[in-house]
Length: 272
Image (cartoon, rainbow, N blue to C red; front, side):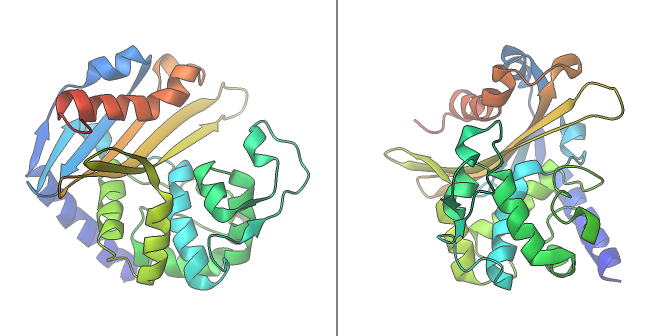
């Protein structure tokens, strides 16, 4: 019954969203980085969405490291994490991302997107807690079992759309998630990426790379967050992939945030 109610709620929400969505062509920004994808912006004061590649904005993708946002909230709420200053101990395995090869706090782990740290906390949280808290948070459609408890956001059938990402972030920004307000405030503080004289940018990137059989890896990238500027709120979700199922080049890695900031600055005259 709970799943049915959530599905009905989502359908009603998305129909309403479609009725107040303006479509724009931002293809040139994706072409500059040799990627393809979609972009969604919600202007909270105008109560209006702006979308590039609208149909794709409704398509679900693995959340990748954008899941570190609800993952941290669930860890704090269940006590699996004492607080974000708790130390994640390096397991001694040398990994390709140098920043992951050290002890660090969970605040640092979120900022450097340390997968092994969040896999440690996921095993402490457990599938039962995820299946209790994820419906309450309404973060997409995550499928969690005991066997996939430390990988379900990186591989498998879990999915979230750009509209769902924006909806989740709007509720987080307003402290309207079903977790303690102090935990929401703690996570929001960790999401700050930049500040100007009249603006603050919060966000989180994500990246999955997976293959089936002998096929080359399929890469998918996220950048989600919100901009606070002069009392107004702009929520965004970008999703993209290399053109022609290509490799994850530096343009792909850097392009997630670069494309978003270019659109915000050049199309909406923000962050100036």
